[in-house]
Image (cartoon, rainbow, N blue to C red; front, side, top):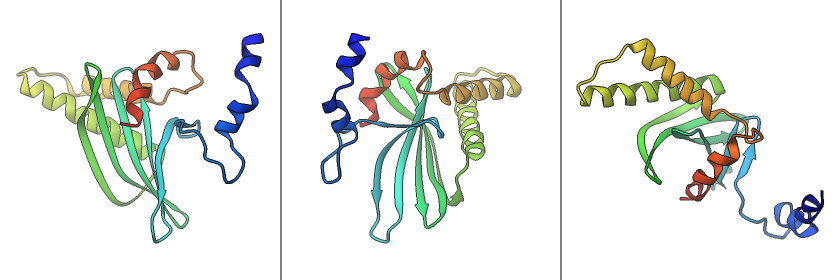
Length: 167
């Protein structure tokens, strides 16, 4: 309990939730409802709001670029990154134009992008695999990226990803 009291100081709360007019400490913001970190938000000259969201598991990182126009939320792009040693490597990207964002759409597109990547990688190596097995594997990978930050397994993964969230 003493370590918790040391951690929960007034300075910590002032850095995370400062009063109006003071700068907030740059810490990735977790959105539990979308199961992703929110980064890089800005407002355009026309008043539209944009942000990037990142979710990940032990195998991939999914990056969404989202736009809020009036009362609609659009998906501008989805990028899939794979781990290449200690760095991330872009393996798939799709851009969208005025496509409404919802979780089922993002999941479906992410799964299809991973299927395409796996299939093309296997074909390049001269290996064939059953389509249903590839779909099941991509479904499992995407499900793993929707894990809650509040999960006990998440901290282990976070230490690998956190340095690259702002890269």
